[in-house]
Every structure is written in structure tokens, then in C-alpha cells.
Image 1 (tube, rainbow, N blue to C red):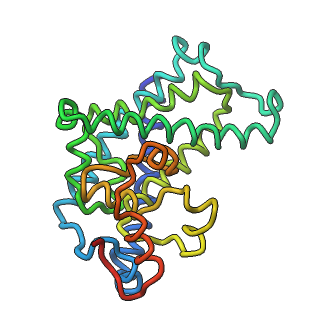
Image 2 (cartoon, helix red, strand yellow):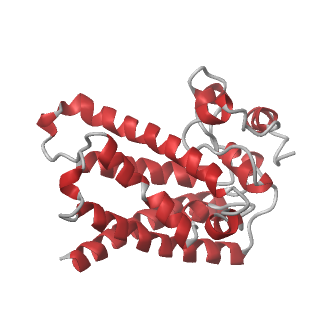
Length: 256
């Protein structure tokens, strides 16, 4: 049963990655790179070997993610979580609220584990593989070392133990996570100026934000939001200027 469950879960994770990252890659890197060139964050495109490395590590990452999923669903773990199966137990408003809460929990978890993995004693073991993509493509979204894959996958255990959550809410959360992760590694800034300058939008993480993290190796540690980076002053000093140029000027195409 566990083997079959693992196989289907791995297939689902890999297929979701191929569809979402593949569509983004097809649109921005194959079909219409010139149309979006003014929103390219770094001028050069990644090399073919970068794409191969990113895809290869991503498919191994899903092996780890699937194992964590099987562990979560096992009789040894599931009864101790707050996962519930009847939507009526908490109602539809909470169902959608739980997805938002999961994103907030994940963003906090990601910020602190991300900063931890940048510690000199941990970086090579955990995070170097991901940072080989200094100019990331959509395929880099899950390009992790085995140890980092365990860290990234374990957030679902934290969420399941921390808040009541329905399996479909978990599925929706994971879908949103994948979409936003691909956007973060897109290599292009697609948010409009009005959004990034709005009172809500200024707290959203952007592709520019995460791309600069890959380029400079420090600062901009958040995932979905910029709260922790702003509160702890870890936003790259050139972030606002770089983002403003990308969303406002059709002449600027690269990071300063």
C-alpha cells in the first residue's frame, strides 16, 4: 500500500512541476522571450547545463517529498496531526482560511530555515545545490540537495501538527506553493507597477526579490511575503530601486 501510495504521490508531484514550470519556461524562454525581454531581471539566459541540473535535482526532490507525504499519511503519524476529513467540522470559511494560515506558517518556516542554511557551516551541505542557479529559471524551483529537500518537505508536517487542515486544503496550499515558487525563479518580473506599489503588494515577495537573492547570495530570504525581511532588515539595499526600474521603465532590462 505504501509503495503504491508513494508512486502515485511522486507522479503527482512530478507532473505538477512539469506542467507549471514547463508552461512558464515555454512561454518566457521559448515562445516569447523578446516580448518579455524588458522584464528580464538578468540579461543573460541560463545555460543548457543549468536547465539539466535543475530538472535532475528537482526530480530527486520529489522522491523526498513523496516519502514525507507517505510518512504523514501513515498510521504512526496521521492520528497525531490536526488533519480532518469532513469540511463541515470547521466549515468552508475556515477551509480557505487554513490555506492562508498554511502560507503564513510556511513563509515563517522558510525564512528561518533559509537563513539557517546560509550559515557557513551548513551552506555547502544544504543549500549550495540550489544556489548553483545564480541566474535561475522556472526549473530551479525545486532544485535542492537531498538535505535541503528534507527541510523543505518537512514544512507540511509542521503545518499538519500546528493547525486543523483538510486534505484538499493541503492540496490547494501545495498548488499555490508550486506556482509561487516557479514565479520566484521565473527570471522575469511580471507583477504590474500598481500592484508592487500598493499597500498590500509592497509586502508580497517578487521574482525580482528572489532573483537578487540567487545573484548576491544574501538578503531577501522570504518566500511569499516580505514581512520578515523588512522587520529584520535583511532586504537587499538595492531591491526597491531594481524593482522600480523593472516595473516602470521599458528601457531597463537587467539588475544593477
